[in-house]
Amino acid sequence: MVGEKELIVRKIERGTVIDHIPAGYALHVLKLLGITGKEGMRIAIVMNVESKKLGKKDIVKVENIELSEDTVNRIALIAPTATINIIRDYKVVLKRKVKIPERIEGLLTCINPRCITNQPREPVTPRFRVIERNPLRIVCEYCETIMEHEEIIRQLIGE
Ligand code: CTP
Ligand code: ZN
Image (tube, rainbow, N blue to C red):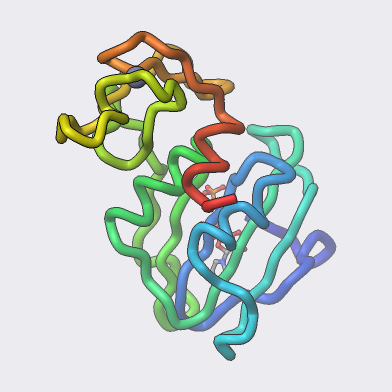
């Protein structure tokens, strides 16, 4: 809910608004979506604006896209507080909070080079258990190596 005074960027007609992103993470979310700005659709990135729930937050608005389930799951690992709003005809037709699953399978690789999941001859799918949500920390179910949020983000956006 924003009054006239607070409106920073205008509403979009159709597309997706990723709201309640922790402040400072909007660019990671954009990178995850593979959006560079050269695609042509209108994009708004709002950073470090006031939020009742988070203190400060970022928002990413992209016109004319809707996100796959897989993408939403990846966004959860980058921005666990995010809300995905689908906009059609200027209205929010669907609003959902992203959700970090208890177990993460396949999306990430273990940082321990000696982990069984990193042995080329053993096709073992990496699997992690979430041990902390804020900040996100996960543990490898095979070798117990802990991975921190920054490492998780690095893997997801390929840097
Ligand atoms: N929004 C938009 N264009 C629209 C409708 C909504 O860009 N046509 C944006 C709003 O600016 C807001 C987000 O989508 O950032 C969610 O909109 P809305 O549900 O109306 O806002 P809130 O009630 O503040 O959402 P929440 O309860 O999730 O905080
Ligand atoms: Zn491991």
